[in-house]
Every structure is written in structure tokens, then in C-alpha cells.
Length: 192
Length: 167
Image (cartoon, rainbow over all chains, first blue to last red; front, side):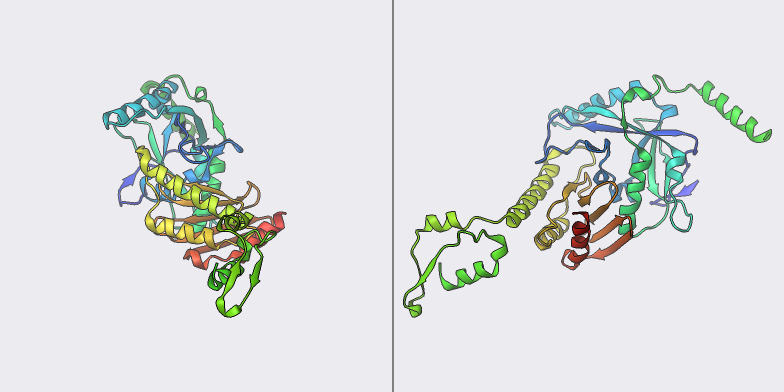
């Protein structure tokens, strides 16, 4: 368990788990250069660093999904859910599409360390009403702004390039499968 | 154009195209300068220079992106605060000539990012919701940081040195 902004304590996600970030694009380019709300930089095929905001990493949490509890079906249904939310608020359609996912192992994020060897980011399990798989990345240490600029580049690299949503499992792993994995892990630890 | 305006143009020469600068002919100095061109010709001749145009374009993009974010109505979308906008505009107006080729990214949280360089060598300037500026520069030779400064305090020299070395 780790302390997070707000004082609450949440469970850290295991290093061996995979997490994904869903990346959307709205149908209508709104800003001058048509960038927003496309989160992906077409030159690098990685998330735009500007989309990894300090407020996300220090307060709200940078949203992810734990792939073991998530599925392709849920990911593909997400744009429709967002449109529905807009419609309920009386807003017009935005033409959301899921561009793809950024898929990484939690250990890659946890392995980003500062000069003293202290972990910079932590991935916390934060299930909510919409998704039991929801997780968040938050800063684990207090850093000055300029260091935030440095570490978010490391985080962008750890998240890697955009991949199609088909890399996600078609269905979430069942409780039985997960218990099986846990037993296997405990067995490996006991008989090591 | 009276003498005061003429002086302002002279002080601000780098922003104007002076190749075809209007000719002024002094008659009786005590009566002031007399301009032998029509007002339309003056406007046509005083075209903004490249630096001025770039600066104006970046300011326009900043304002447009900020306004668009305010109108989007997406979940978790916030336009930049007035403080952040003021800082960003001060920075753009204060950037030295030669430092105006950058990517401007306004985040969904209203943070404003100025990105110079590429993946290997970069210079990032960040303005937070309180208008506070920070920067980070990564080059083969090492890193440079700067924190908690106002836009007016930004060390242009450091950025120009980065831009010049990449040429």
C-alpha cells in the first residue's frame, strides 16, 4: 500500500501485470492544427507529452486499465459510452473513436527511478463504477516542475507506441484463472 | 505619420519589412515630417516581418486552442487559466528571434507546453495553472533545468544556445 495525494491508501498494482491506456480521437478536429483531441503524436506514434499533465500525475491520476481485468470488447464499447454521457448532458456528438491502446508492464513504470534510486511513479488500482480494472499512475515523490518535465518523458517512453485494441484479450480473465495464477505465484515463491 | 510614430517604427525595426521602407522628406522641420505617400501605400509598405508574423501566429494559435478547450465540454477538460494565458503570451512576446519555431501544446488540463527539438534533443517549457514557468533541456552534453520563474525571467540565452547548436 502506498500514500497518495489526498491521504488515502490504495493498493499498488503488481510489477508483473500489464496495463493499458485507451487513446481516443474525436471526429471533428477542433484546434487550429487539428491536434486536439488526438492524444497521439503522428511523428512518434506515442502519446503527446502535453497530454501527460502534472495535474493528472499529482492529483487526479493518469488513467489506465489493468488488462487482466479488461477486454477488447469493453475498450471498443467505451467511445459509445462517452457519447452517451455527452448526450445525457445535452451536448452534441463528438464522433469519438478509439485510436488504439498504449500497453505496458507495470514494472516498466515502477522501474523509473531518480538519482537516489527512489521510485518516481506508482501504479495504483483504483476500481470505479465504470471499470473494476481502472488504475492510475501518480507521482511517488515530490518533484519540482522541471523534474516533472523530465520524468514524463520517461513515462511516455515506458508507455511505448500506439497499438491496435486487438492486442487486448477478447474477454477479461475469469476469477478461476486469476486464482490459478495466484496459486502458481505462491507455489513458485514457496519452492524457490 | 508623426515624428513619434516614426520613432516607434525605427525602435521596432526587426518586426517590420524595411526593404521598401517609406521615404520621408523633410520640409520645414518645425512643421513636422511630411509624407508623400497615401495612407494606403503606407499600410502596404509596412508589412510585418517574418519574426512578427511567427509571433502573431503562435499567439493566435494559443488563443484559439485555449478558447476551443473552453468550448469542448469534454470530460476532464479545462482551458488555461487567465494567469497561465498571461504568462504564455508574455513568453511568446519575449522569445528571441530564432526561437520561434516550436510546437505549442495546450493540455486537457490547461497546462501550456512549448516544445523545441525532437526526441533525442529537446527543450521543454511548461506553464502551469498559476502561470509559473519551468523548463527542462536534454542534450548529449547534459541537462539544464529551471523552476518556478515568471515568463519575464525566462533565460532566452539558454534556449537560443540550444536552437543554434541544432542548426
